[in-house]
Length: 337
Image 1 (cartoon, rainbow, N blue to C red):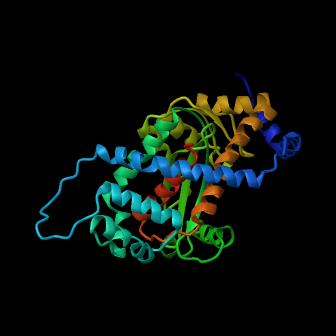
Image 2 (cartoon, rainbow, N blue to C red):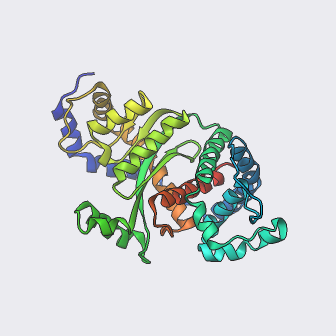
Image 3 (tube, rainbow, N blue to C red):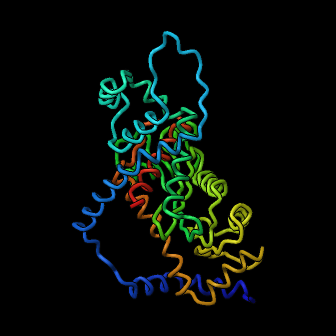
């Protein structure tokens, strides 16, 4: 496995032409939107059918210590809290509007739910634990274990009422340039997700006010904690650095990595770094075929924003993380069928 830095940089120099040639030869499949919408409807039916029993199982292992309840108003069960929050996230209602809809709970449970109750669910530790358990259960039910994955980052605006691609990117650039950093952090949140190419399901995700890098670290650590084995991982050029290769291998083991090397890349470094560059130089077209499978992670995020929107109603980082957890759960529920 002998390559030189010059070999890598020679390929990088003609990479744009190679990518263009690859895309021209790749079959451009146009989406049949009628069939897509039909399948979406069927997946939604399947998701609702599976949801309640999965939530029941997710909360069954959580031991709740109840305090004194004499004379106090009846409270939502943990199962009801999670179902209410998932429903709110899917239909995109504000906390006030959602609490009005939940007046139906009064007919069934004699429980009056206020908008403050709904807001507090985002930082309820029992709810957060239940959502995590639900994430693990969905992956287990789908048989997601040995994963060939791809990752991508994005951002959500918190206050701007314009499209993310224009306004949110301006906020992101200002944060990177340290312009009014404290204020800008309250307007923009980074999100990173890793997806299983075979099942289309998210296996790990992270949120940060600080940087996409921090969100990426959180996503990797989450995968490690769930015990999923990563066979291969595809990331964009930003992560083409020895530091990230070391971090991934430290937490996920000996995964095959695919990324586009930077123009100043060198072959100096650990074996995992050299191995990636070797396969890049040996057969660039075959390498690109594997690398571009990460497009599924990009399309997955686009799908999510179409479903639940690109603006988050939460402001606190812990509650924003919960909101992103709800997005990933609905994404995975849609692909469960």
